[in-house]
Image 1 (cartoon, helix red, strand yellow):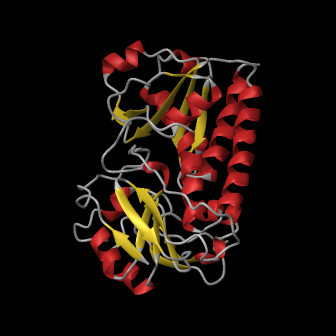
Image 2 (image 1 turned 60 degrees about the vertical axis):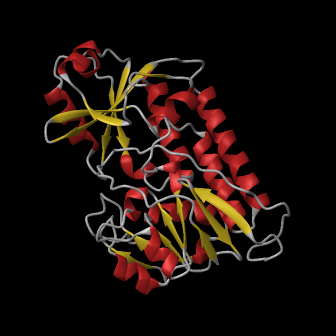
Length: 327
């Protein structure tokens, strides 16, 4: 397995809960369809965050930058290739109880040090955010290249954003994984299943164009989320994104923005305790009509952290709440 570098290592990125770093991801797909680990379609080149990575065979020792990405690999039928995981920003160093046998926690820190990852000897590091690969005392692209490992960033959460991502980002990721594993037919079938689920979720809303705002409360401060995956939820469901024109994907809400905001429905991101997050928002914005009229719902951050299938899971939960609010 070889790696082709086409740009400099990404600049440092501050990884904040709820911060979506948008980017781009393209692939040169294999032209033949074959079973798992068949080498007929190789070599294949898949791009991620502006870099090209060449694959001579399917990965067999994969380390996940967020263990929740395993759901997508399982859906493709290649979950057995995962040998290690990095815990997410909200896991508090605790591995999930249902982690498959033989899969170890490589790092309890979301930004992993280089040594444990190198020791795990992956042939692919499947990241959930390019901030994991900035390499300032931690893991870097160069470290991976030094052991012959490739990298791929799920959700196009790249250090150099290229605008809001749509639900197409999910399908692109799965197509790219299908190329990496030489399983294009399985990837196509999974994408069709997910597209059908998204279409059904949109249909359940009966044409609603409700104006929705995605917010997060941290230390009493309110942050607006306009970028991915919020942008994917609103676009795919036909809703109106209150913060579609936000200059960054995630930003603190100033007083002027708070006073001008009048969404039909508010989704407040939370981890663990949904009602506590809703209460925190009510305390921070007590005069917001959506708060006083009980039009605030929780959005579970953990659902979407691994990207891929998890984004569609989160979208269905959003649609269910919008449907409830419209009754």
